Length: 96
Image (cartoon, rainbow, N blue to C red; front, side, top):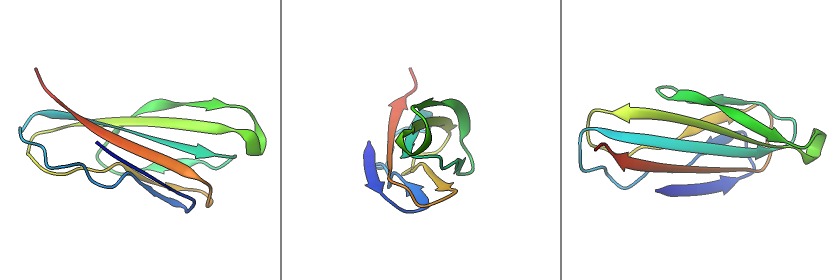
């Protein structure tokens, strides 16, 4: 798991510890404030988003995932349309 926060246009969870198996689910979320929009990074499937509130009081949470076939370290990243406070987290799950 890795968690990060900042107030720039580039969101990034930082990388996870290296995975140990070839088949793992990588799940990440980015939450951001205001009326900004998010463009997720490449390689992930966007599962949707939820917005709470309106205008500058709005909080949006976007989720995405991918299934990896090689061991490695992973991060969830995106680009916001304007610099706003954001939080990002990523976690890996071993396939059963």
